Length: 603
Image (cartoon, rainbow, N blue to C red; front, side, top):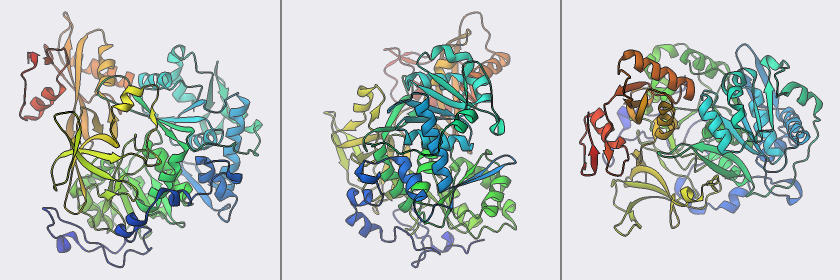
């Protein structure tokens, strides 16, 4: 095990009501990239950050895949491991040279299929090598890439393919049969489906093409065409309280943010073995599970298996992981198992641990010190921001429970709306308000796909309004309070109530439905639904199980409700809007607040 940092119990000093873990003055075994926070912030500028990357040869623009793959394949790192994949009984390693050649094959394959600049390529797969090759190859071909979470059910998948106007879907035979085939009639724009067979085998299904055959026929020589930094590159979906999921658009320019935050927030160094446990179906798994480690020239570890503490500890030990980026849900599950599972493990290579996806409770930060000899470093960002905005850094003291301080180049503030509809900045410490960011960083979303009005509502003048409530203390550390809307954060996934409610309403017995997030010690929140049944249907345990199964089939386990309660009627405002806030207050025994607009209320 690593030598512990100074014990929080011995060096935790009250500061503004919050303890802190004091970092050694000399730092860790590797000099941190961000050693002097104040000086770096003072001297930082985005043109200098852009200069850390090469750009396409001949001044032909900026392309994410060139910065992640090709520039290293043409240099001294060409024969070092770029991607190390651990599957179920199989391992594969790609050097940067091999990764360049295989992603070139993908780019050539897409051109043969007639996909041109701006075509929409969706990838639905578990963490298999083909997913990573497809994402990078499509970026080389200047297509727009959207990885989808493989645990989604058929309805969320079909909805995202529809909204995103998918031209091509790359998926596995098993996922296609279970989740796409029956709904393909809803996708007239979908020109091609390419199937990856088990263990690289060829596969034959009507209306599909075989990945293996297409790749074998594609050449390994490809020149990335000129790419405007503002060309659309990535499409990530995020859920809201009303309406369908929103497609957040990101440009190739985002790679500047991915690269810088990999250096500063995750403290990546050239000899690191880096493991981000997030699935690329979520923005973390793309920005930091693919792009940031590769642009920084570190070996990127990919593990196909889902969470299992013993397996993960074995991976950390065997693969000599030095930087680990994971989720609070996984940390809390490890805490539940206790430190005994770590007994005898040699984790001496591990030097930095970070967490993202939902607030990391102080106990989990301190448990990192007890179990691993170092704290977990929480950070905060969103699908819309494209990259880490606020973080705890390798050389900076940690205040357990805090999001940390803004990245160099990022201006964050706490705002409150005034009576005229404008916003005022809160300057006093520890006053609640909405977290806002001054617009202009490279990975800021360029819009919501075909939803300009929803996009404009995210801004007040020069400020991007995050929808998160937070406070800032006297030292500039930010503290997350909660969402300002009804979006549910469960195991790091943002779940929009509307999507779950819509699926429940498809059941013939359901008259109306409302969904809330219910606190859970492991997942942060779970999805709980309240359902009013149509006449002639009985609210009993059999109906509850039927609705739970229906939702799980339609939405997938990650999104479907874990609990359902029945109500004769759901509380509504006089304008007809269901009051989720009131349902949540009653569920948690909280004050009900203003109910003057309540129209119906039959419990």
